[in-house]
Image 1 (cartoon, helix red, strand yellow):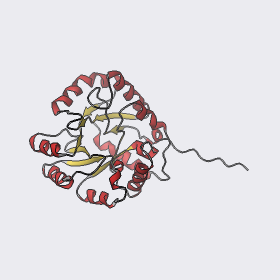
Image 2 (cartoon, rainbow, N blue to C red; image 1 turned 45 degrees about the vertical axis):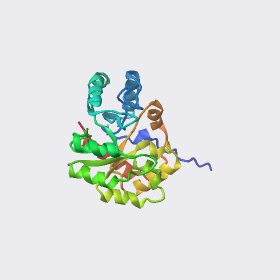
Image 3 (cartoon, helix red, strand yellow; image 1 turned 30 degrees about the vertical axis):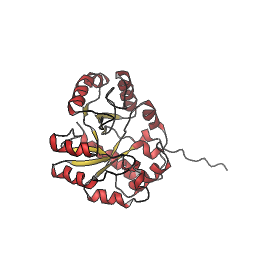
Length: 243
């Protein structure tokens, strides 16, 4: 008797109807995402074919690398809006702020670009956590913002100290996982952390973090998780950001 192994479900197969992507780099020529308007159009079309229905684009704000100001981002949003209109998907622009000394100063001097209401997408360096991480998170909340930490599973300096994630949660951080992490796209260590965070029900929202066509096409890769009910719930949670 022959036994056939059931094929693994692809990541694109679990994208719910009406999915709102809260983390992407689709604005052309503003960071390391879409290079031009043709890239933007192609990426939107590919993701739309998987069930993505709305996008919040989040250009990097990273001093010394991507020196994007609020005005730069809003200007690019305005010039790119016709592309999204032509493809037929609603979108808005926020930002992905790296937590560093410059961000701490920015927080004191101007209103931040938010995903919705007071929800702000933040990230850390992949090398180490900021020295004043918890101080900045506290200041964010005192200023009335709710921090959403982008791709917590990619901070490999927490690999041997996963209790730090509980500390971040207690400090008021919400977590947004990169969906490609569950396909092994970023490597096994990232996959392992993603599994733990999902199993422990610590993921609040999901994002594509799409930069280029290779990212977009990788949504056709299989999910490398045995159980992903919590991931599917986090996908549904994104409806909170519906425009």
